[in-house]
Length: 233
Image 1: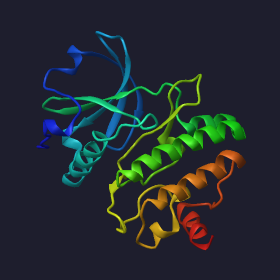
Image 2: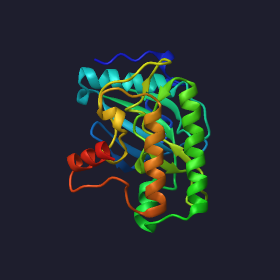
Image 3: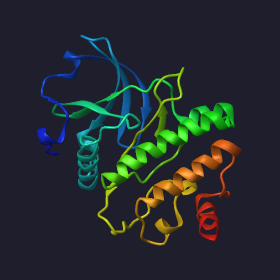
């Protein structure tokens, strides 16, 4: 049984989430969770609710989930997605997140192929602002990529970074170990066994290249080939 301490959340409810929210269709799925659109019954605000089944969590996954929540509860930046509150019952944990209705940067990039320099500049500036904040807090995001950058609405170019499952705390002059992230965006030092916050800057540089050109700077027919190209380049 996973044990969750109330201090680990912005707000924790033991009441049934359905007393507060109407849960609608599934809008996203991951290996250990799914995300459903939801409407708060009182305010009518639209939220994204991440649903995790407790029985699906192995010990290491429980620890990783708690580490992610421990990070998120401390973060307060306009370009970082927020966890608003949490509900828990015997079988599931529900994380209520602000709803980014504009879709992911990956979806926009797939649709438009190349994004203008003006829009790209606004997007990259916001990502770097969020990363500057994270790094000042001693946190490495670890998985900057288009699918983890979401637009607040369809009409504007306000973006927020999400998905802190690969994030880690790092002390000054400390190196992190282990390969996380996605092959196209992974930094060479990550592959060599020791990295710090600069890996996020590398990934943002790769993202910038892709937004302007429509192609990755390092490519290959498989993830292994991409890794080889990153090491060589």
